[in-house]
Length: 166
Image (tube, rainbow, N blue to C red):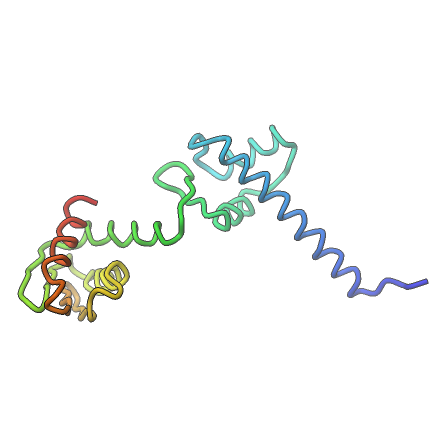
């Protein structure tokens, strides 16, 4: 007869915890698809899961599960998005909110930003134009984009589109 050690108990607890998490995530995923865009807070989701499925999950745990399932709060409701789409969307919004002017001076494009947002704009530009530009130089309220002569007009047009239409 084998006597269970502390390690055996720890492993059993981890296994049951992992299984419970998987089960909760499957139910939550199904529930979110079923609910559509009607649920705006993790508290409401927790309450609905308890009422409909008799499952108690804390709001903080639901929030963590939603992140893992790639649900993000889009304004007032949770929607499922790819992480890359969310990041690109945030960068585009940042550019739209902080770029004040775009000046094309081949082989560079200069951006005037709101005070203190040169570095953030630089990060957004490098993310959105990865592989298309050589790099950026950021100041407190300006960014210089260094590019090849081949893509100046395309980059300029995309920046203007982001600034005015995103």
